[in-house]
Amino acid sequence: MHYNEADMDSLASPDVSANQSADALAGSAGADSAPRRTWLAAERTYLAWLRTSLGALGLAVAVGRLLPALIDVSHVAFGLLGIGYGALGVFLLCAGAYRTQRVRVALAAQRPLPGDAWTIWVLTAVCLVLALFTIILIAVEV
Image (cartoon, rainbow, N blue to C red; front, side, top):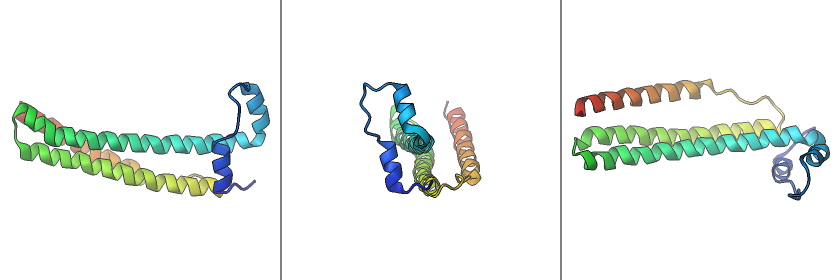
């Protein structure tokens, strides 16, 4: 069976009374249950990308602006570290949106989900550099 985006939207928000039992819902959903769960899982994954991006952007403000003011240290070094966390947040936001769009297209066409191994390696490398820079900066400033 082929699902287009309108079908997936209707599957993602079924008109089900709160009083119906889980058994009745499972029985009425039938074969549509798995695509609906997959579509909703993809939505939750996008929201996780979004939350992580916003967290990195908040950390960028905290490290780049607030921390130097609170502990009276070099604004340049902490500003650069804040820029790094800000760039990570922007990358996470863009990568999450890109991946979500690819997953939606694959789900709608009933194709295998895309594998984005490059994202894992880029994020690992960026986080490793930021972690090392953070550790070095803390060691030097303490």
